[in-house]
Amino acid sequence: MHDFRSDNVAGAAPEVMTALAAASTGSASPYGDDPLTRRLTERLSALFETPVAVFPVATGTAANALALSALVPPFGAVYCHEEAHITVDECGAPEFFTGGAKLVPLPGAGGKLTPEAVARAVARAGVNVVHRVQPAALSLTQATEAGTVYSPAEVGALVDVAHANGMAVHMDGARFANAMAHLGCAPADVTWRAGVDVLALGGTKGGCLAAEAVVFFNPAMAEDFGYARKRGGHLVSKTRFLSAQLDAWLADGLWLRLAHHANAMAARLATGLAGVPEVTLEHPVEANELFVRLPEKTIRALETEGFAFYRWDDGLVRLVTSFDTPAAAVDAFLKIVSATKESA
Image (cartoon, rainbow, N blue to C red; front, side, top):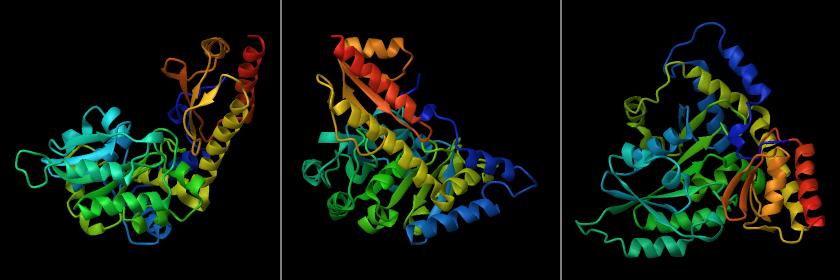
C-alpha cells in the first residue's frame, strides 16, 4: 500500500530531475569551479542572509563527518544526543574523519538535548586534564531523530553553553527543511543568528536524488575544508550535478513546499491515530516522523496489507512521510488501524 520506512525510499522531485537533465547539456569546469556551484553559494548566502562557504557532497554521512573534522581535533569530544545519527548510524565516520575524536552521547527527552545536560557533561569532562578528551563541539540534530524540532530560543540556549566552554556548534540538518516548515521562521534565526557555526544541509531526504551541502556561516572556518573533502574522497569531479539538484530544490521555495507536504502527511497520521484507543504517540509530531505504539494485531494487519515501516521495539513502530506521500495512503493506513481496533 505504501512505504513509511523512511523518506529515503522516495524518489526525486520532478523539478530536481529536470535540473539534472539541463545541467547535462554542454561542458562545465570540474570540481566545483562551475556556474551552478557558484549560483548555489549565492542562493544559500541569500537564504541565510549572510555570506556562507558552501561545499556540496553526495551523502549526509560525508557532510556530518567532514564538517566535524573542521571543528574538532583528534583529542576532542563531540557532545550529541544519544540517538543522534552521528553516533548511532554513521559507522564511526565522524571518529574516522576527525582522526579519533570521541563522541559523547547524552540523554534527552524527545530527542532533544538541554543546556543543563550539556553543562553537566562539560563540568565533569576534565577540562585541561591531559588524560581526558577535551570538549570541542556540540552537535544538534534539526529536526531530531524523534521527529521533534528545536526552536531558535532552544538552539540559542544550547549554543550559549557550548560557546561559553570554547566549543563550536555543528547542526545535522538532514531534515532541516522539515524543521523550517514547522518553525516558519527565517533559516538564519535557527542557525547562525543563534550561534551555529556549520550546518550539514540535507537535500536527499527532501526531494533530491543525492545531494547535501556543508554550509559554513563563518567562511574563515572553511579555509582548509576543501582539502579535507578531497582527501576524504568526497570532491565529486562533476560537482555541477550535486549543485544543480540543490539549486533547483531551493529555487522558488520548492524545498519548503515539499517539506510542508511531508509534515502535513505526518500530522494527518498523528491526528487520525490520536483518537484510537490503545494507540499512543511517543513524541510530539513536529516534522515528518512519528513513533507510534500499536497493538501487535494491528501491526500484523498493516504488514499483511502491504504497508512498510520499521519496528523500533516491542509494539513501537516508526513512520516517516515524504514529499510524495499520498493522502490516500495515510487514510488507508488509518482505516486499517481503526478496523483492527473495532474487531478486537
